[in-house]
Length: 441
Image (tube, rainbow, N blue to C red; front, side):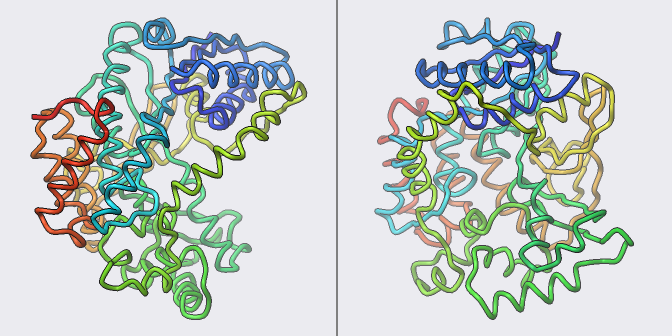
C-alpha cells in the first residue's frame, strides 16, 4: 500500500485535485491518504469531501486518516512514501495584507507578491522554518519519502529543501503544462496544438519556451512572434507583459503576465504610471482574489463538502503522474524544480533552483541537462536567482542584513526605492509580522 501524506490539507480545492487524481489511478486506488493541517474546521471539510470522492469514484478503496496540529505531525508523516506540500503560512489575514500594505506606504506596488519581490521574500522567510520542521520530522520517520512541493515561493523553498535537508524534493508548478497551449490558443493557432513539441527551461515562473514546433517539426516561433507583436499593438488583453517579452527578448515564459509584471524593473514604475494601463497590469491582484475566494467559499464549501454525490475527473497536476510513474516504473516526463547540480543550465549557478525537464520512473526523478540559455534569458533569470539565494541565506543564518540584500537585489524593489527606504521598509515588515517570522540578528 502506498502512503501519501498531504501537508496543508485545509487547501480543500487543491487537495481535491491532487488526491482525487490519485484515487483515479489504478496503481494508487488502495492508497493510505493522510491529511494534515493545523485548522480543525478546514481539515474536517477536506476529509468529508475526500470521503465522498473515495466512495463515488473509488468504491471506498483508499484509506483516509486525519492528523491535527504539530503534536500529530510525525504520525501523519510516519512511513510515508510521498509527501505533498501545499501550506500557506500566515494566510491572507494578517500576512498577505501586511506584505501588500506596508510596501504600498513606501510607493512600492505589487500584483501577486508570492514568488519574488518584497512580498515573496517575506513569505519565504515565514515559510522556511515550518518546512524545515517538516524536513526534520521526515528525516526521522520517513527518510526515503519524496517531497512534492507546491508551495510558493517555489524556487526559494525548494532550493532550501534541496540544499539544507536530506529529503528527496522536487518543486511542481502547473504553469509548465499550460504554457504553450495557452499561448497558441491566444494567438488563434489551435490547429498546431496536436502533436506539438516543446522545450521549456529556466526558473519557476520564468521558465522559457525555448523551442516549439508542430507535429511535422515546423518551427512555430516565427509565426508566434509575428502574431504576438501584432496583438499587443492592436488590442488590450491579459497577457501583454509576456507578449512584450516575446517582442524584446525573443521568447515566451511560463507564468502569467500579472506575475511577471513584478519580476523585473520595466512595467510597474511610479515615474511612468501610464505603463499600468498600457500593459493592462492588475495591481493588488492577489488580495482581490483572496477576498473573492473568502466571499465565495461558503457557497463553494456546500458544493464540495455537503455534496454526497461529488465526483472527480483527473486533472493535469503533476503529483499523481509522478507517484504513478515511481510506483509502476512507467516513465513520465515533467517540468520539475530541482537544484542546478552539474550545470543542468550551464549559465546559471549550481546552487540555483532551476526548472527543467525531468524523467520519472521507478528509480526516481532525474533532471535533464539543457545546456546554455540564450544570454538575455539567463540574465533575466539571474536577477531573480540573486533574490532566491540571498533570501535562503537570510533564513539559514538568521542575519537581517541578508534580508536587506535580498530586497536591494530584487529588480522591482531596487528600481523603485532608495537603499534607506528599503531598509526602513524591511524593518517595518519584520516588526509587523512579529511572531510569524523568526528572530533575526
